[in-house]
Length: 164
Length: 219
Image (cartoon, rainbow over all chains, first blue to last red; front, side, top):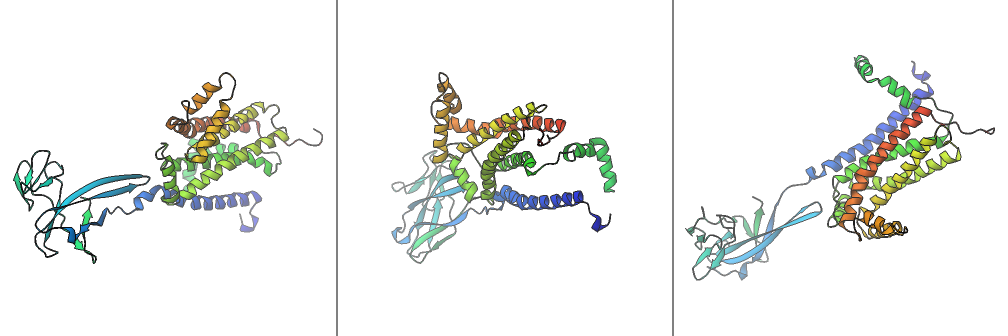
């Protein structure tokens, strides 16, 4: 059939097809983006977290700190608590150890006992020395440490938190 | 090649017959008023598709219903578009179905042999209103909460059995999590399933009887 002989019916079928196709694409692409949106969100769960002023932390005595990580998934928020101790070994701002207070045995929170000069876990009596090594009890290894830290210009100590 | 593939399929599926009977059937000379039934069907499908998409992110719990819709509107790519189409499509569907009904009444198309098409159509109209009523509560904001409070109270004003109707609608004496949950169930399964079934009957009757002629001056 030559081009100029297109029938009224053929014309309407073609127009309906083209208009329908355009509507399909205009609605279809956003619909796919809508469905797959969570897959495009960045999943990085790391950030710098302020844990206190360096000036407040005494030399030679573990300084406790805690922070909460809030995770937002759509309309739901989950908050998890974390804690640790800063041990300044000298006046040098970089001469310090930052412990994670999670016991390496079963993840209870250890406390600093000044009289025993040790971190003691309340769950199974795990005992760690002031530099984190295991003194007694079931823990399989020394206390974990936050190794990435930095000092901001106003003297705040920050640690780099990464979900492990 | 394509022609051969099509012929193979047609022989087994009867595509040509389907096309001829469903889309190419003879029609009386009509006007744009004759397109309202197809428009209603299109809106029903559109509401179904956007509704399914909304269900990916919506949750029918009093704690999170409002937040989840907030998230659809502000957090998800094109969520505002999907919900916007569903929101305005709902209003439009009630309007189009109602005008369709008026048209059928005015042109007397409900007469023999189409009485059952008309009766099924009344059922479709009531179900469409039911969809509007149940869907209105789902955002769980002040407006929808109080609209449903009033709406169910109206149903509760029926003599003798009003209190029972009210409690059946709300799932208890007060608007609660149960109300939201049963309105959700009605909105996404019970009413749409009933609608789809009745639409099937409605379409079958239309194809069986054909569309009616508009009455002429002599009628």
